[in-house]
Length: 114
Length: 126
Image (cartoon, each protein chain N blue to C red):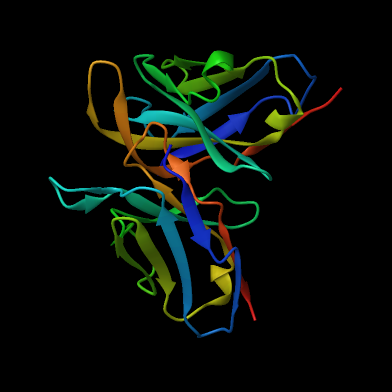
């Protein structure tokens, strides 16, 4: 299985500042024939279901604020929140669906307010 | 807007079978693939398996010997059975929806999970 490793495990950022979360896969999730990276990002708030933020490594899901952006290719990916809002406090997960099944997730990054 | 809701016992005894149901509302169970995913403190998010409306399944090899899934299209529900549970199966169990980009003779390859249930805590204890 592809192992997804996120860094850092936790992160504290001041309101209005930039938050950056990294995700590394143990093998490439780039499918060369279509040049797509099979990677998604989720936001998980306590008491709520995980919410899809990003798919194809950089495509925002409908309704997701544009302060959320993502980039990367191959094995290294980044989720960026350009200006942290209080409602962004959550755990963030990356997921590869290059080999799905089984799909695999990162261990999560806990984002808090400094 | 589709909604998913898990239901089932919150406590299961060791060696018994964990049984959960996910009810889909606001949309049809057809044309999508329905997964069970669990979250444990030790292993994070773990995909358990999927089923589609016709009953085609695929299970995580790590759990395959103990997992079975079924679907009831008349009720827009699908279910999970996990047998011979131990404390390691204590987790929050989620149901989730995805599409499939393509299938071969034995497997359908899933995309991202675009809708999730709220999750249900299941503890394994005597």
